[in-house]
Length: 111
Image (cartoon, rainbow, N blue to C red):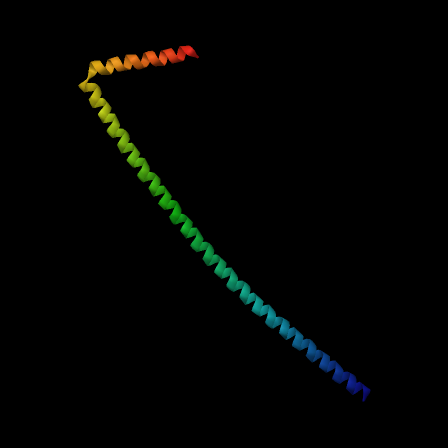
């Protein structure tokens, strides 16, 4: 009878171990699913962030190009105005150039 009790206790212990093992497997499966789900969400968020950064960089680059184009247009307009002024008033332009050269020369001698 003691042997029957030992066998019954052994079967009960084995059942408890099996139940614990099943619980561990279930928990591991659940955790694995959560990890996969979280990893997928992180990948999606990183992709969206990278896309937003790329769009922002493109917008900044376009603004820089636009600013450069406006500055270039202003410089060309100033250059054309300067050339027109020099060709319309050659003597005045020459006198101004000589005066400017004298001022720069005087400043240079001071150093």
